[in-house]
Length: 318
Image (tube, rainbow, N blue to C red; front, side, top):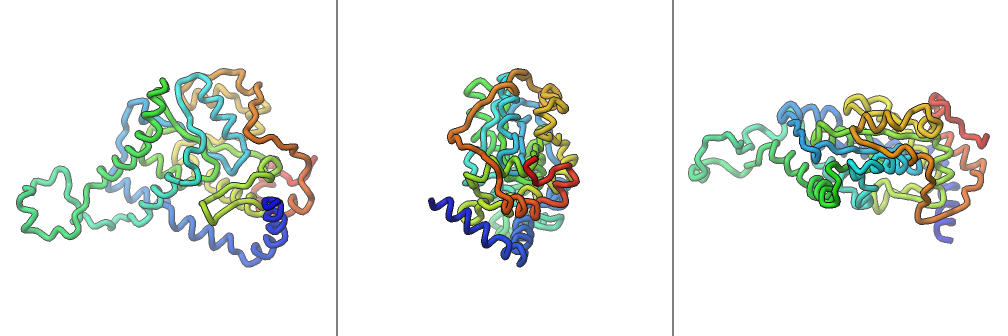
């Protein structure tokens, strides 16, 4: 009952919230807190990514434009050959990826100043440091990157290897292109899939659940919130997926055979079971989807257009 009341309240309030453009301001704050391509480029210029050929440094990331858009299907396809263990939204509410990425947002070509670093090739004897100004004494950026890498390798790569999977990865439904650029800096050999689906069909499957963009205050449970999330993510994916050598995957094309599953497996460098797409695996909770009320479809259309229409998606039930 509480979820129903929240949902109904959202339908009433959202049109007024939208007019005040609170989402626009939220999006600006959110993007300002993430490392942009310019920031990653500045860090890259000071500490170029190093390519490591080991399987553990060749993860596979599945980014979805919102929830219920096909990321789990691609996850099942990729794990079917037992070459890679793709974790499913690991510790999603904790948002470790988002917080780690945000920690780089202050970096630039001039910050931190180069004199702050005690470089690994510095010839200064440790005993002489007491005679120097060391109030700001930083490990090198290469050490910082290695520490970020170590978090993911310890949390995801090692448990995958212990279970017999030489490679690892994860799928998520709320991360934008900025997060992909952060992960690309850490793992230059990583593979990225950006999957999307008709937002009306995704919303019809999602509308009884709800999720968090950022816990605990940024929850998605109305069609406007869902649609704005979809559009924001899609704008970034479409414009910049080539910056991480990513592949766009249209859910409908995958289901209809226009985009072949073997192309995805070849791109990721893994084997696959071709029967995966023919199996229906149900989730924890089963609900009858039914139809989407007209008011929800109209609110969704406000949020996702004109981008959805340009992609051939229309907010009707036909």
